[in-house]
Amino acid sequence: MESPTVNPQDSAERTRGAHDSSGVTAATVAGSGASPAGASGATSSDGFHKAGHAPAWRDFAQGEVGRGPCIPFERSNNPAAGQWDGRKLSRGIVADYKRMVVTDGEGIRNSVYVAGCPFRCEGCYNSSIWDFQAGHPYTDALEDAIIADLKPHYIQGLTLLGGEPFLNTPMLLCLVRRVREEYGHSKDIWSWTGYTWEELMRPEETPDKRELLDEIDVLVDGRYIAALKDSLLQFRGSSNQRVIDVQASLAQGTPVIWKKLHDQHRFIPDIYGKDRAAGEGSAS
Image (tube, rainbow, N blue to C red; front, side, top):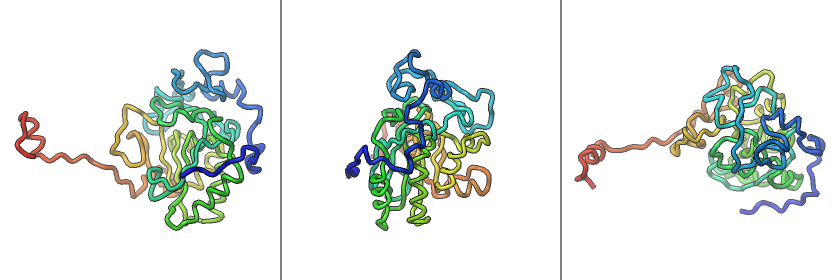
């Protein structure tokens, strides 16, 4: 189904002024793990490396331990706590909005894809929206449509993807708080993120990330790692990623895996394996 028509002039008042309209400065970009304008390699309009061009991945928290599974990862950027601040980086841009999706979490859902992600994981499926300006403005009209589209009883909830949701907090906090105001917990909220749970929990991390996390029910965390890709996994692309029950994890102070998680397991009957080993199988 097509997304509602969006008037770029109809800017959402709640997000207006939440970021610097002058754009990402060279100093901000340099502190965000990306090359400023003029550095080697092609850059997008937000100052980060364009998709399709070899990035210079960096670990900005060298020596820090306990950052979660497979972190630091050598084929993505790895931020220090608080280094990337969505209140400054977000341009208030939505790359896509999809209704009635069945792949972005449990049940039938509506999904918001935000623009901008400085993790730059190798092999990322959504590299076309790494740029923080890849899409159209988040508006009051779009927010109203998202809220209205959640009303049918068969829509289980809302999913936040990207791009990086935790670096688009100015608009997403408005959205998820309105979902809670109008639907309470009758609609669940899922989110994907390149951050690990442990990274989000660092005391030095920006407070807006925790504010968004507080409103989420299920979080799929971690970088995408192509070498760990597994098509049998439920709701995630690589085996380092986790499907986390957020509220249970916050209560217990440690990541708690979503209890409904059900990965597929390949089953090969013994007789088939023996026949293959013999070269020619008699079973059909």
